[in-house]
Length: 168
Image (cartoon, rainbow, N blue to C red; front, side, top):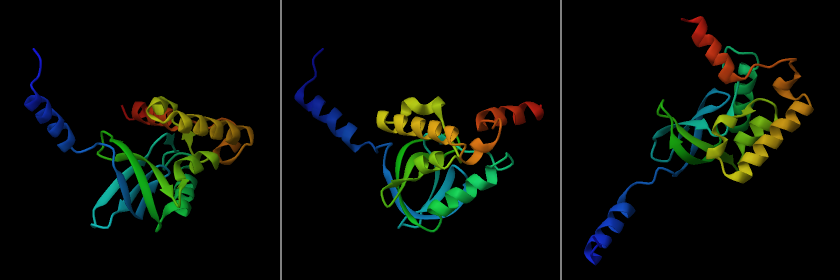
């Protein structure tokens, strides 16, 4: 059954009125929880918990966990950032790329050897980011930078799985 012009206009209006899931967040970083999670306070005094997209940093109790947090703090704490959000995770955090003066903080964490490129979610990244992050991790590994100085660093997703199994 074909749509009438009125029905089509109504559908278009409805789609345009829906809020976009992807929106930029601008504000000051007021908290760094760990090497891949921050809180941004926007101009309306609304706090946004942000999980850095495309990376996974060591957990706080894991080797290099505190160093990863310190590295991210040095990059963004107290500074004004733009966050290109993509989605919301199961914990209610917005997932996004954090930019400070146009510099990709997520990529900087991988380059410094303080985070892995989170390949499980790489299909959600722009192809150019996917290549940059993968290359940055390869370079950090080859240069034995950051956590790659360790003989056998444990990926955070494997460490979390081990923690869950130990707690059972």
